[in-house]
Image (cartoon, rainbow, N blue to C red; front, side, top):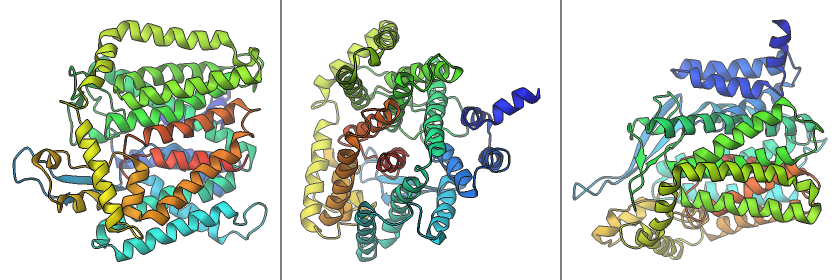
Length: 473
């Protein structure tokens, strides 16, 4: 019994145990207790520092948007026709936000030294945040903008925390294990949703309040789409594509000469994650994971053909082939729906959103129109009835930053992202785990061209943490 307990409390195992324990929670109190016990065990039993324990707890809580206090914020009222829904968004004070605030103040109070001094890339982010703060104050609706600033500060601030704590190998390993543990959890939830063809009724399912029966595809044949624990299938698909390459990179690594239990768990997480990704019917998610697979193959052949472990790649291909053979009608039907994007699909609506973003950039090029105000500003324009029926933020994360934060802030964010990818590219080539994190972060860039991955899902936060990890290589 004691031996089993020690294994469960081992920091290499505990992320998996406590992530799966979240399946059992039924209310906010239990939600907090899981994270509290996890952090306490790391601090007392495994002798992690207080900051490391809090950071590990933050990592485990990243996917969960469920707030301890939460509100639906109305931005645009519905109407004038009953089929015009208006626009609102969810804002919650989640455990990860509270933990982050504590961590950030601890980081500020620590004496500079031992890698804690600000780097040039840090100043780029600080200027980006400063411009965002000024843009919030000059916004015509500072209340809406302030809520967006809270989420932005949390997301960007994770880079400062992560880039300091990822210097130690122990936190790097914990980060990788936590990402695979989260993939396992979400893969289980997504696969069960696919089998049941409906949400599971879990406390953590964000879409339960607005879509109790789940989502269906809206162009082509109507297929049930899994959304995991997130508010929409596209968010879930994008998030899975961040995690899948990490698990694959771990399986290709030489951390262990023989197959350990952790590698079998990674195979299970990868398999369930791929099945769940398919079941999101997110075409951008499918595209991102195919491109990430091509990057792995290209890097593997450049390093060493044997290093790629073609037998493992063949096994993954077999899993995908088996999954497609089961769901082949749905797969090809979804592919054919590309033909419907410009008719019954939302292609024209997406193009209109891009045009609206361009108009806002011209209208407020320096400070932007203000965070969370895209739909509000858009609704004041002379829109057709079709455009009013597709009233959403522009489906492109970078265009959203340019329109809501202004051109200077948008350019600074682009410089920050490109610099991290560029400076870490040569350093990842001798480490498959780092390659997996690099490729996982790269999938965000792909998905961000088709979706608004900010404020309403945790993708940006994990992306920023991955960049923090890559900056320490």
